[in-house]
Length: 263
Image 1: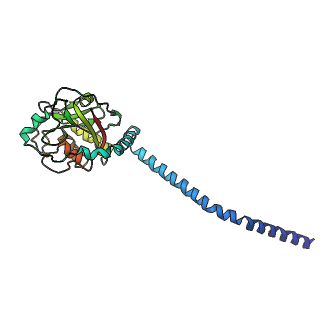
Image 2 (image 1 turned 180 degrees about the horizontal axis):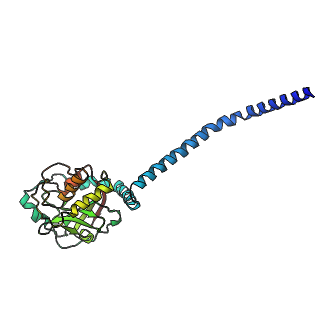
């Protein structure tokens, strides 16, 4: 009986070893696949975790706007160079108010997707009315304003008006070409602070000859420049000159084109 038990035990071990040896090829062959699958799953989970953390940093509406802007920027960036004209010459300060005041009768009808606009976005326009010259002595773009998402309109400055608000309709009808720029390096909180600062300047006087460090008098694109400089520590003046023109903002490396419309 003892010999029979030993024989059966030995036979069982041999059968198990043979089975293991026969299947060893398939086992070893499946390990790399399992490791690859595990690595892929871990990578996917890591990506999802990163996206989740990014989404938690800002409201969903803002996340959607940024996503749409990135898509728009990818299609518009090829046109960016054509929007930056060479040979810009600045006139003396006393010539500027009459130039910027020459916004005339509405004659365009832009179909602008306002859903992608957010706090602190900057709009620039070229060529008011079909009967007027599109060129101005200080560059390609004639006028600019900064978007206030809460009120759904823009903060800017004009002669005889000072710092005031401009409607979306104003921008849809007054300029032959309209472009939108945003500042990706500024957080949502910083952009809201920029707009809050600009609201505090409402009603203050217009003066194109004022320096960039004079915070009592304003012109259209000095407003966003000072706002971002003070509230986000971001300088959006491309050449660091005495003025900050609409073209200086368009040409700066920290502003990104996300919208362009021609009437």
